[in-house]
Image 1: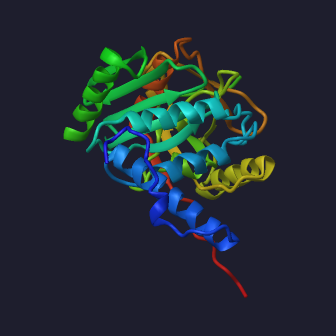
Image 2: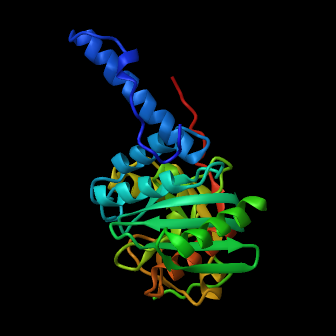
Image 3: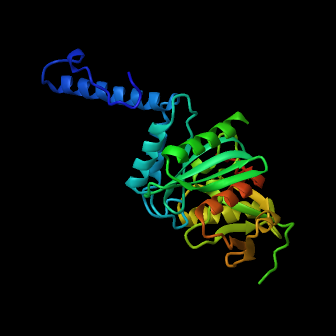
Length: 161
Length: 130
């Protein structure tokens, strides 16, 4: 299977026929293949996408933090999923969270002073902040080209700690 | 207005489970300011530990979310980051951390620095009398 390529579902290997049971089995099989592809995209922790959707659910209503937080919109979830899928093979999966402005956060964490947070909102542009010992690096960028390379570099620096 | 000493401890009550990491440290998300720019905290001064938890419980009831713990840090931490810590009562001992920069990634880094200095305290185990 080539990473990043759509899965060609081998329907000929699945149950044939039009019964409800056959359709159910086919659907579950395709869902599992999707799940495997998502796991391969990140290289580990197949539950990171489950975590993303769980956070999306928890933060979908205004005031989800009890303090007037804005809801996390579907567009932000789509952007976060796109970033997770774009991580190279072997990259440690982040943990997922949310902040009151309605953004999702992806966190790579080794210790309280070795941590990278990426905020993903409804805009393609993301905001990031890294605390690596006494060094702080923060800014905004797109997760493509040089911006992506810079953020992957930060992930590596946090993880090497 | 009651002046807050930099040595004073402040508590940030945590009501969202994903703000607490598996190693019982608190994510910086818990310290990111809300849209109004005033991060709510409770001053320890003059309160017993039980009264601090009671203040947290009141917040929990008001917001209809479970109280999962609190993150303690001294007022010096945000002040050293050029943030302002000011009393804002009622309720008793309520204060806010304000004066956040406009740029989002700058807020994020400040929240990370506060989180790095904060200590997570789980809620006390309640005794059950049957």
